Length: 593
Ligand code: ATP
Ligand code: MG
Image (tube, rainbow, N blue to C red; front, side, top):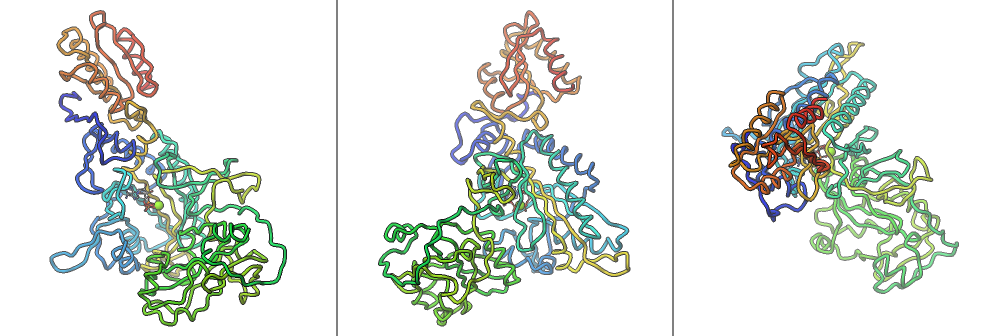
């Protein structure tokens, strides 16, 4: 391809709309253009990158025995009503774009395809003899993200590979899950990406295994914790650790004391000489459940710990057996709107009585009480006294009418000891989630009542797995991981072109002639090669070649008359002057070993 015909529009300046390097470079290199918030055009070079990634994904999915398919993007609302997800995905902060057709029927634009595929499987896979089946597609997904940002990283329209597998039993599901794990490692490896598999949250359905693949990068939106012995890695949403030990209080009788204005842990500790880990703090939150219930909650944690929101939402889901649409702190305005005026913020204890909710206008009038194990395991502790400016010291759970059941609700943090090996410690890294594999179990097949007949002739819901890769996000993550000050350094396997021949001065006949010869030779050898034949200064062409990140560059310049060229490798900027025949051989050797 000739660069003069490539519609190449590169930008020298950093576009104001782009915060992170990969987004800036893709815009500057003419790979993408923003059309609207979270909506991007993939320009021809970007499309080539995406197709090369897709080819690798296809090869590995096919190798693992999966079947390619293509499902509709318009989803009738009934399907999502049946799974119980329509409300959660369309109301409030729901991310499904939805619309009405001319007959007034509601439709959603597919953000994911569990509903569509499960109902199809239920119609077509009638017997255990047809199982297992693993279906995948590569397709544009739509999600009305609350904060679309960072270009292709979090778009509202993006390309995903999604796969769904159906099994007669859990063991078979686990086998396919492992096969997908292996396929994913090969895919990321072949794409030239360093991706770390981490334990991931699986929602309120306990037991189901789930793993994310994270490209480690400063710009990543996810926080991951990795043990320094290399044996454990998890998304912070899911990560566990051993909490730091705290000095136990010397036993003393319960005492109520005046703590005027000391409503935070820091204020209390500095005024009373306490340590944060000797306190139980109580957070007041509100959960909105799928049936519309607004449930106030009291969550107790040891004073030096932080609440993990994902663990909390899962715990609430388990307790209420409902999906949790929203979970947030309660503030003074909320209380005022409910007509509640007797909750002493900053002085709440775990035993705050349900009576304070008696006047609530729309909330449930009793608290859901949850506690982290770090709090329930304390023999004695200090806590709020449920009255303005008062705390209790040397309290025990017995004094409060018994301890609630303790569960893991805290954030694991860097520096803490690991559960699998107390000698190892957690380290923190940021990651970009490029893939996610998930043992769904029977959640969707049960909800949609999709069954097969098992060996004993009885109907049973399928065991299911699902496996996603963010194709467009992966492409940008590759740039985030592979770039330098001059531009992108595409890994060879996914680069838009394999090589670029740059004619330094197209007015020089010897240069043009040799450039064309080299270009034709490489094309004949099957190399996907660019020829920079533009009437531009050599410096401009070199800058562009660096920016767009083609792995190999062959410069035909002053030594063209003598038949010599420069061969430059983009990744390390190593440059060698060689007779053009040798340069071509070297290049073929590198690209087609
Ligand atoms: P995230 O936590 O980043 O919002 P998710 O867990 O909702 O992602 P999945 O439903 O697991 O995403 O989708 C599979 C893959 O699709 C993700 O691993 C990610 O790589 C990609 N992906 C998800 N949302 C987006 C988006 N808005 N833009 C680009 N890629 C996305
Ligand atoms: Mg995910």
